[in-house]
Length: 138
Image (cartoon, rainbow, N blue to C red; front, side, top):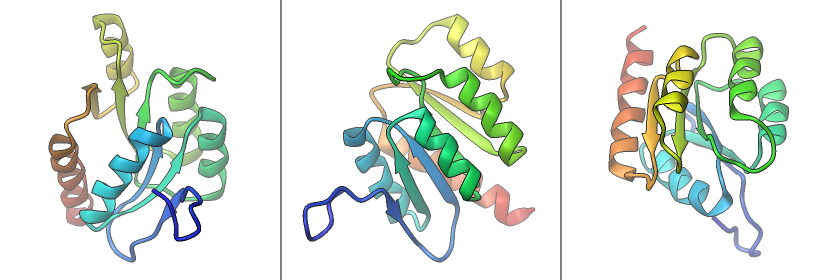
């Protein structure tokens, strides 16, 4: 998403709802961030794992939505590190390259939802709302 000056926005604040970190290619992340905001949540967007780890050090998130296939870095190490920093944070992974091995690795890391792209934005919205309702109930 672009601001009024044409700069790409990476933080979208909403007072209530979940705080969500989206780690994905900018084009895909913008669409997902719009859905997150539409549902009443806030989003911060990064396009690589290193920036994600920096955000996790400085901010508190309820949910991470991450692409498993970004060119720089390793999704598996990022999940482990995120849990070390943020505790039992909810994580949703997305991939272009589905395989049983990758899905099993994600499940072993207690990823709550594993999505094969192309992303169904309505399905993702339903998953986010389910997580939100569970959090409000706790």
